[in-house]
Image 1 (spheres, rainbow, N blue to C red):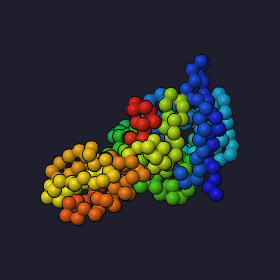
Image 2: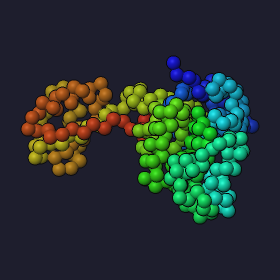
Image 3: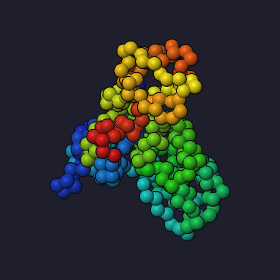
Length: 299
């Protein structure tokens, strides 16, 4: 049985008369990667602060590895806005953060190489690009090999190559047992790398679970792109009224939406149209689709 790393039991947080997090229940287990998504002001940063022990819940119980939360060497954190001293080098910053966390015997060369800053570690951070500063922030979050990693907009400022490298690193960390929470507005980017999704609106948890399960819960359709041979028209198929709403999206290509429960039957019927159908591309609901549904169409 997987260890419970983080447990939020009916957590609420109020500032004065304003309730910013409302009765959130959430469990996160070892090696899982949770995408915590929501609009600005949904409560994501407040939840992060409570997990880090920077603020206390107004109500409910929150535990990290079965204990009350607090800054420790088992948690790594990358904030949305990373600030550094311009005159210090990347290596000097990592040494500074390691001392703050009382973490000994840190291999700074390995950390710098892991985030792609091996050749820039001894340069002043004032000369770093935004993406380089973001990668240095990630390196400081990894000091001490934390068991729980909290990442707030972690790929902000990273180029496509650095983003791919970043997510490959997350996969390696998860495989080694690290538990990850990340918040990002780049929903299409994160959906392939997270095991679970938690959707917040105005401090309330609207939905939580694997993306495929949330799509089924929302009854979202699957999209099929049907490539026709030589522009041959698609004949009517009895029992599949969805085909009447097919939309032409190019020469010899149609797109339709079908319910998940009818997908296999339709695919079987289409596969029997020899000489008519050249190929079929299947597109399940995306995280954008699921997010929009649970937000009531508001993005």
